[in-house]
Length: 187
Image (tube, rainbow, N blue to C red):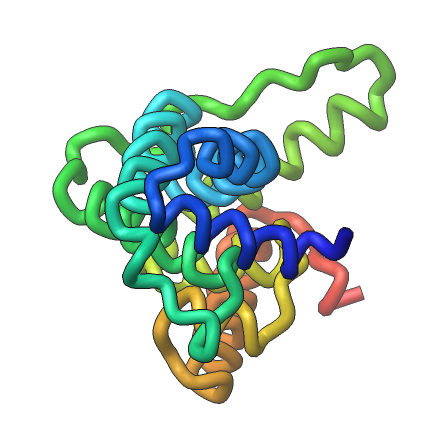
């Protein structure tokens, strides 16, 4: 069965109070939303809190989802992104570089070390971006959403999303260049 159709059916059942449908939807999408929240927040613990809050909102507001306006996953991404942005605005006390980088489960070769260091530098550069730019990069590049889906998740037009992406890529590239790193665009 197609996931979109199954998601739509599950949302209908969730709106009627079906806990089994809610658990099925949660199992299916929790890892994805944890990744998005972690990318935006830069902190796995906070990402877990956001994902939990997002699924609580899905449970309590399932009847508000309108299938004619957005896919279930797009609607849920919007919830996660908005919660992340709200959290970032409230908690500006911990800089991203103090939060640290996620540990690589099996670093052994110098290539793995280099990739980890580069990911940390990119993550640091992304952490300095405004929330909307960071969310746009996370959705389009790390979650591989189309521009239309990402624009819907961020509640902006496709041209506004593309503008966010252009500014975000330019800023990340400039910051990496300032650190003395050559980016793919320069080579």
